[in-house]
Length: 424
Length: 103
View 1 (cartoon, rainbow over the protein chains, first blue to last red):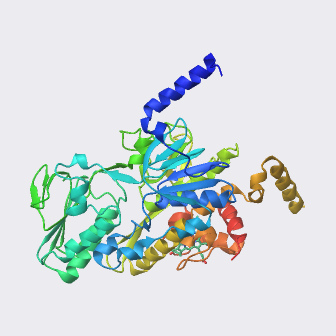
View 2: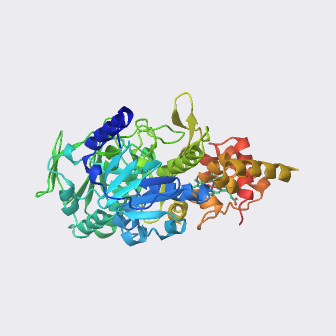
View 3: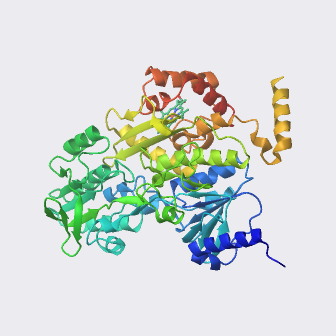
């Protein structure tokens, strides 16, 4: 067999590609034999799981969907602050992926090690998965390097961020349980954008709710890197003053620069703060898989996408949904599911050579539990604006008139319904 | 007449794209709009509990409710904020979609 010039060029190009992704040259075999059109989704959180289900459902189960997820179980981040308040346990928020299998979704539990956007392959430790289209739904990772003295191990062991529901949520609850009455719980909030804008202020309420009952002489100190409360300000200040008078202290413009884990001290630009329980929430960026795919183009942190398809602005056939997306949209579980559905519909159209919906709309609602029973929300519909090539909030969105027990009940119904929509 | 028309479309699409025939009769824009309601009202309007079931809802009742949420005539905790994000034409599309879902 002789190699002509054209083949030679092709081989050279392949060689360069292999050079750029050295591990892929030894990637081993295709993990699942690919028959028809295949979408691989990396990340089985709210966004990834929804995309998986809706691609199957809306394509009449014709498109093969492989969902790669590192965890065996799904743990809901929304409502996980209530574990700190004591109303729920982490088990109440844990679901398995059984419902997705019923849709014929192929689940691969494993860790992605590389993504080859040229050859359209996702690499795992034991082989690779070829894709026609890839959805990257990695949520967020933490920028520990921005805070001296803090890293993933310290967070796991003693200064939990608990900003992904799971073991750290449980650890933080345990630390609160062993805190002395009269102690200080200090938490820090990173500069926006971060996952779940109202989440930190809700957390302050949930911790205060527990302390008020069990350790009423204690304090909650909020160190916020932002110049002001970033979400539902009026409602949160009212909840703090009326439900937890003199317990919660809020300090704006207080970015944490350094942590001393041994003495539980944090340093801001202005002061050193010593606490009994320390909850430092670091700055965030798109989960590592986004960088592996080469799509985290905005400040090396977030991913620019086309809002009609959620296709990356960097690489064709790679879509990004959820917290990892660069947009003036709240990073929430509900938002991730909304984006996932637009992306799912668009992928199905594109795979049939059709034009995707040119007028997509998405919604977001975030309920915040401010006590065991009361909640309030922010709700918005976002419509595609062709001129701005962006999702713009429609008139009429906004926050609750006031917190209420009625909304507390609705928040629980929202959770049950969204989990069923995502995983059922 | 309409039925026949739909049948022709289904067949035509079926010839070109045999894989997707069963979806052909569904207005995908209406379906996409309706997907925005699923977080609270369940997939295709089949509530998992606590919120109203939209699947199989009478069209006139549906459109009336949405208009009343939008105008504020009907008090709501959250629906006024969602309803205001859509046009009256979209209420009709949504009504059509949910009415066609089996309860």
